[in-house]
Length: 267
Ligand SMILES: C[S@@+](CC[C@H](N)C(=O)[O-])C[C@H]1O[C@@H](n2cnc3c(N)ncnc32)[C@H](O)[C@@H]1O
Image (tube, rainbow, N blue to C red; front, side, top):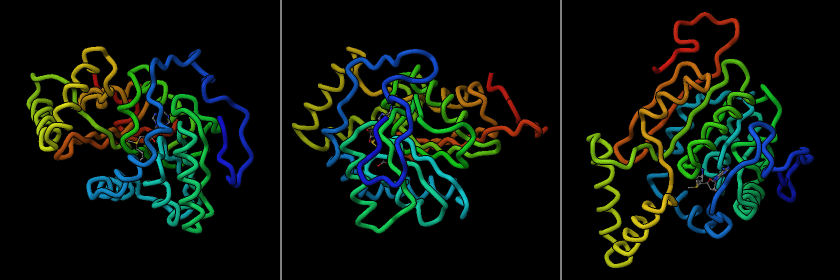
């Protein structure tokens, strides 16, 4: 774990490549996010991502004294928008350059209650039960299944009882059986083909990467509906958006609560 220069808090004693739980993190040929700062920043300004930001923060129902954690914070789309409404935001980002950009945007905006940490979602250098709300936008489909599950364990560990999770991501399976998956695949193909030759080349490249098992790893709506209760979350709701995305909301059960959905299993 590396703090970003200028971050107001002292670094915590953990190494992002050495998760505390579950052994060494296997990250074969992981993407070098340092090279994608401009792209992530440009995406953050698109109407689609701004709409996702607003929806995630609306569902998070932020309160003045909330401690918020943004996972895969990028250049700060969620973290910087949440900051004025809460006590503190911790932005976790695996890429040092992305974190530096977030920090410079934070400084330029005069925001003082955001702390950026360079770390992996699957080994959060954050104390147990210190966070009220975890948010995340379009980060999880960059993790394989084992890493996703480890990140969910970590989220559950750092959330206070009754703490909330709001997670937006690409949510579909690559396949033709499920009608929504089919529609999403077509949407993505059409989106690329509209870009002409560069789009067609990108499509071919993605096809090859998919065959080689090196494409992104979106999980389907059903996967999230099963994985969140199995990880120990309660009140799980996962809905598809009108594109490839979906939003999951859940909360950490309170040990003394007897609400009917506590510890519910999605089967
Ligand atoms: C598509 S960008 C989205 C960024 C930001 N959430 C937004 O909505 O603008 C995905 C981000 O997740 C980060 N990321 C990918 N894998 C990660 C991991 N295992 N732990 C923490 N961050 C990760 C990347 O560095 C990148 O900044």
